[in-house]
Image (cartoon, rainbow, N blue to C red):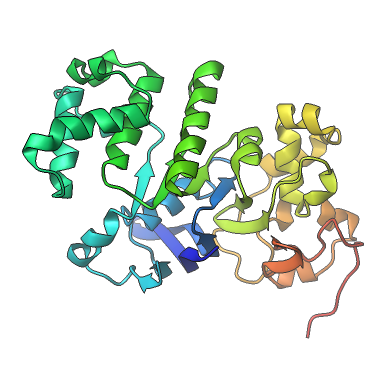
Length: 343
């Protein structure tokens, strides 16, 4: 598969104004800390991590709803970060984002018919006389009846609203979809039908998905590769393996898997360690850590390895440990804990 999207050392800082005594100052809040990865055409890349780790920020940067502080985004080989918005407009059709709250992307004062007419008119590819046939074709793709066209957003169920949002995006004929929690807050049966629909569309249209979710079980089911984020950094990239816990090499990935009760039952994972979670909440995350491992304050692997100084003085690179498997850790679980020398 060919790389359709490449991200190089992407960073995003937010600034918080605060008062210290009689003075005002800006505090830097790093949301992304030098993220790099590639996405292949037709691939489903899953992104997991706890709330606040930068998943949604990354998605918004990819569609340029936010501008990066530094770094590059290459879309089909073209560097789009430096493009003015007027020039990027022709690339915007290629990459679209499905937001977590589907109602927020719909105008409550417009019925669904008007929503479709608006987006189809924006494409400039369909004559007004052909609007209705195009709308019916889009509804058929997402398994909706034409009766929804007379309804307003508040009259739709959560599942129907998500299908409408998907159909409107499909009108643009995108190649990459960024799915931000696409099945959040849905009933189990509806969640399953939406997942099946997304997989069906991906297969039929050879779409590329960047699937952001807290649901590790779903991510493992649908993804070709999984990217694990912590505090704005990528700590591990791997292909799903449903048979062995040894596949998870970063200490944080293991904590994440332990926290997922369903995954724990299905895969027979190890028993969670309460002390580890106490450290996770009691420790203070550094605002930036250019010369240390970002996960070191919470890491039981660091303690088991004898608190080696390398974890506090050298940021671990994302290095190759197996086929399509990368981990940012000095002491990954697939190796014996030993202090290595760094020149």
